Image (cartoon, rainbow, N blue to C red; front, top):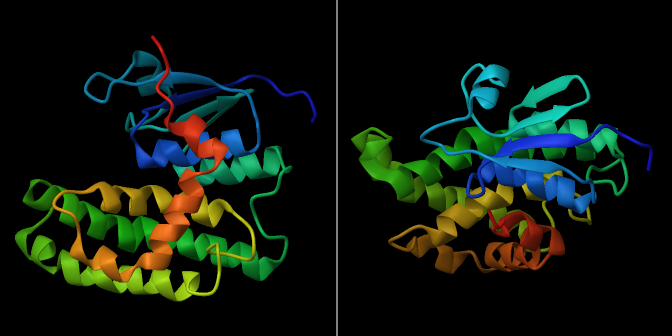
Length: 206
């Protein structure tokens, strides 16, 4: 691997967006320094680098990057091995489509179910269970005869989607529609069994 400047990541351990970036770094075995942010009191350094003071923010060489999927694509281009993106244009497009679906459709439905009216309108909260059932049907359809979301190997598509499915699985009360998503649950179990995930969720000693 070519020599690169140290990477600094402003993160929050439980943030699913930051989880995407940490897992990508661990999959690629790229060393990095983590600055764990307090979401109620962001560091001045983070505020300086991000216009909205959100995590994750990645600092590399003279670059400042935010938006998790943009960061992971940057890491894929900068550290191409092991590859986490299909080589063919269709596979790349599918990765972006799964990411778009997660960010703009699936995640909002998870938030509406998990956080209720504290973050969403009453009619959205009421519709969330039915919408989530449709979302899980989409996942189940793909995973019914594939281990991974795109191609035949673990990729950024899986990294981008799974933290939000994991949020749904952990939400209380338990979402009843999960009983009809056995393949998706198996997919989550495969991901959570990866060493990169274990490193991603590891609590760092202060």
